[in-house]
Image (tube, protein in one colour):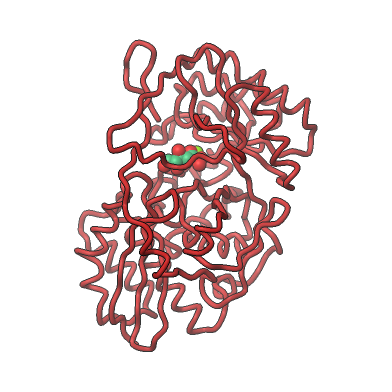
Length: 408
Ligand code: KDG
Ligand code: MG
């Protein structure tokens, strides 16, 4: 069996999804996702210029060898652009493998460990009352877990993850305002004084059963993060995410020494080598890698297995930047993983998105039920794809009140 051709598409409704389609001489094809948020053209170029010419003629069933070829063969290993490109190839090869076996992918991993995988959505508000409304809206839809973020009184500009447009559902979508980033102003003092009380009010209002998650988005210094994690202990968070920038892993030890608040980290990691020590030293409770940025199913499964040895559970990244293809790969891992924790799930589920990526993965009452179709269980409509093309967008940048550049 041989790979005969492969194509890359960039675009989609409200997002620059990077979709790879690998064709074979037996007519079976596989799909993969290489969407690196706000840098989408780069993994697409990596695929087109370096990977696809090498893949043609290879046996698609040898997914492990092909992964090693991509990773070791590059000489300069890893990095988010290359790993997203490898991720797309790896997902597409697993998709082909599942279709050949006539089995959904979770069967190839070891079968189902659960019927539904708990997900969380993003509840956001420009202020606390607005956030309370957003939480109530999601609870009514059946969500059992929510990440909660709100504007901070006195903060010079909206704090992280509070969309300017307050539409129904309040998901944020790339605004495609061009390559030059918008600037947000941040003040850690204001945040530290407001947020613990806000989280306590949310707990009081919605009771003990709601799983409350909160994302600090790398904004605090280690000592501040330790103080924050300790202050929110009575709230009983499901997790506190990215309290400090991920490069300084010792910072997590300081936070751990001062608090039992569960810690989640890893959405910017793209290799097991960036999280193996954190996992082995049990400095985190949830690992947040995404199957797309981490190089696909093959290496992500290794991270999940390592995490399982150390009581670390999964909480895969699932921001709206992940296409339904990457989310499908994660749905299969979630169905299998003995150490599954939770899944971030913001696939927009709009008619346009469903038309581009038809699938029967189902979300019901805050749980994802994985498709039983062979392979990933998601398709890609190339006719629909002609409606879309790349549009430039950018993450905002963050500055402190005195102008110092800070962590987004
Ligand atoms: O591209 C960056 C986003 O994916 C990120 O800001 C979202 O922090 C995020 C989250 O937890 O979903
Ligand atoms: Mg995050």
